[in-house]
Image (cartoon, rainbow, N blue to C red; front, top):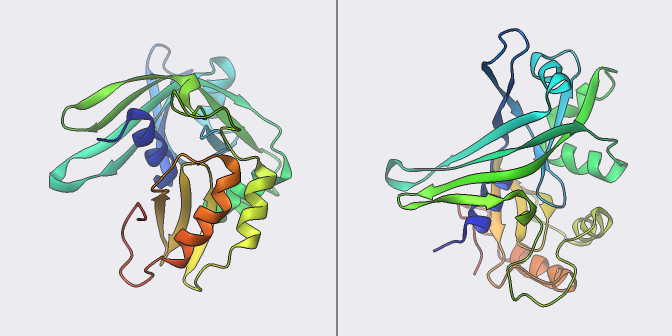
Length: 231
């Protein structure tokens, strides 16, 4: 059975959009939910590109507390989902983070020239995870980006520069677009669909990711590809 952390990271990387709930200014005391695209940073924290004129952004300026819901349909009608509860604040996104965001959300490039769009990040406090029937529980927000207990004392995540170097060094099939890589796995787009591949022996030390990535990419079955893990 997958751990709650594994389920959470899988959901955050597979979902191209989410529901963001903020505290309404127009209707005090009521939550205001909206759908919007997002990507993750190297610690798997949700990153948003939103207009300062938007209703939810004005709500966040008054009260940064919010929650983000992601969901993926499973077999037999079940739905895996996670609600990330935390604080949303504007960030100065470095160029490599902007590049990462646009790999996941290429349509957002047209928004960057508009002066009212800014990057925000959700800093998790607690996360409610439901991975299917009988799989429900809470995780503390600081578990994101932290390797499981007992893992050797190595760097728990790749830097943006290391990720960029790995993506540049790997040649993917023509039909495949590599989006991002981390110590747990990597993300790609095939025929317009986002997929998540989990390293069989992951999470890996940062120095072991390159070999695992090259091997997994070489084995991607482009035709009929629909899986989320690689043997």
